[in-house]
Image 1: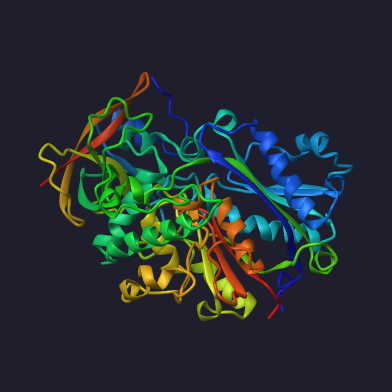
Image 2: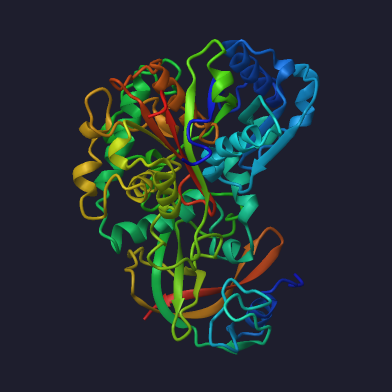
Length: 388
Length: 131
């Protein structure tokens, strides 16, 4: 069995989310608060945290959190490379690596984003990639790059645009029923969605995730230790991170077959091989959707459907809890739960497996977390309520 | 004026002089993004060869939202990925779009060198047209 399989667990979670530009605390304060909530749930003193992992160029260097959390000794601080959300699932694998190799024992996985401190996320992501080739073409935002990829997927690979709308509707359906979601108690006006303003064709406003202020934190410990803490453990069963030849930061010169994908083919292959699981085993998916088309492409990459049958699988009725066969983004996802660089998708993965989701999937045992699609480096993970 | 010092400096200097030049390794591979050494054969013998500004549309988007850094480009505008005829390298560029007709993937295009003003700089840019 792969060393990551069921050997570490999430023992506590905390999330604080606000409308963009309206955080009541500075970024570090919000982050520290989320970490305290996660540790309080687990019954672990924040002084005993000894490691941190983040992704997406988070600006909060862990050593600076030591005073406010009263940490005695920092033994591990690291981050997944890449400016986008591709590293979110990989962050859990990195935390597990620290724990399994004995380099740390109580590791916080986190992401914090408050506009006043970190600026606009879209600008930060692009600052990571921008060069004169892109500036000259007027391609300066993730929405535009993802739009170009989406047009190729729709036009050349004949993926129906309707699938993207079904995915957006499912996210808003769940968000409307989740008290922690920005879209809580609001129904989605289909006409308003379909006629919302163009951003970059084929994307209208409602095809795009929109940023929030906030932070989320996850306490990871060994599986054995998690069983002695207060909360039901949610086990990490597998995690894969990376890119294959012909994919990456290539000025759009990716391999032609990989171009319309979101980079997850090698990740999914490894994840399923190393866990012995398959798409049919997954009860619920938390899908990072920066943009609607990339969410659909991510589902294809992860083997839930193909270019040929995507229209039959990615349907609203099929994507919603509790009745759909492939419930996706049961907290509302980046579109409707909120967008703190995707960390809310991981939060919902844990909530769902603990039976605490606002949109529970009956008897959900396994949850796939798919990281930011289309990033040069991407990652995914599978979490379990038990170790199958 | 910007001094280009990356592996793709000859590309930018070429555009400034009115020519499109792209890098080919002695082994025959075209290397893009530009690198200093070929990843296939290990050779550092890389020649920058002039290419005709002809090609096809690989994909496109028409931007309507005013993103930062695009202030000097009239909205809406089309950005494309263009496959350059012969070498197969894909370049980012802009497509002249006077009548707002949706591009078609595979459509033939030809380019002329213009510029894109970003902040206080004029970046040489291939502006593509249909035909």
